[in-house]
Image (cartoon, helix red, strand yellow):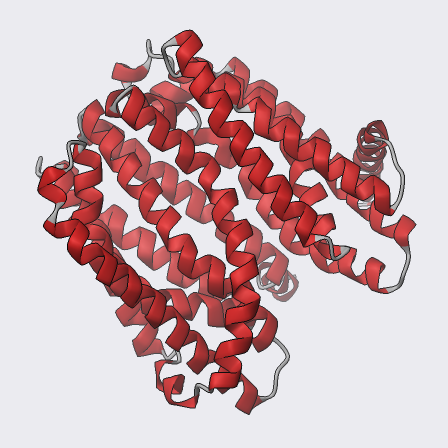
Length: 446
């Protein structure tokens, strides 16, 4: 019994779900501490700093992650060494370019009026250098499907950061500058650990070849566009709120959408496990099976998320009080959370429509869709702030890109194999009922 239980825990699907869940919990814990330790304006500056940092990092992660896994997984030993060495070359080159760009920006930072922007310019170069080995290590262990090692890398990075933050909170030394020191420390220590464990494969840099570098580069230049455009959604809202309403409003808005992790955890995990099944159906040439598989995953997740969304809407004030503390109870954060949780029921449609378009070799539709979603998001956010004068306008505008994504995704998949959106929900309901019946039958037999 114990051996069977251990095998279940070591299952890659469980480790993927557990990894996403643990990192979300740690991220939530970190926000709970930060929202209590820092003033509202400082929280807004930190949110802006982190959002832009992660956006710029997309040039590296978007360029390399998918391309690395594609060329590394299942390859011969010599080929793997070439891929790792070439990835180190490209990752290092991208990091070097960003550092070079950082130098003149830093020299002219005194002319920037926005303090959040100054903070980013001062620190982003050194943080990218410190995080490069752990990033390459993450690519390697993910390609090898060592989700236990991937979890270790992520846990260490976030764990060290949280430990430093807790110490600062207890010693009353928490301020924005020290928080950034803690973030840099977590990145550096994780990279040193990855090098020490041999997961970063830094010694394989010598095995790089120009042919492999060219392969990864030409594949990555397409994937980075979609990843960058996709990540711009949240970042565009962050920038619009920061520059139009200020850091304090950004802190409230970020708190209101924080519990979206409840939605993102199952979406990321089921997307990772659903893609191989969708790909297998497509490779069989079975169009009906592709759509049926997509409907099963999408509908089931939507049905499963319904009670979570209803609960979040009902208990929004309690959640905001727990995460942000008493100073945010009477802010707009709770209603922002309610708005996002209402829209969230459309997220499985958008996510799995996009995933299926990639599987059926229609990335161009996805890329165009993402660009249109971004344009719709930015336009709606500006209009929302103009009409309401507060963060409610941005929250309500969040429905616009989601509807664009669902609409274009549905159009693209309907060209492949016709189906109705309503059939997605009926399939999901049937799957949920069957799962419940199966579970009760097992309980009755035991």
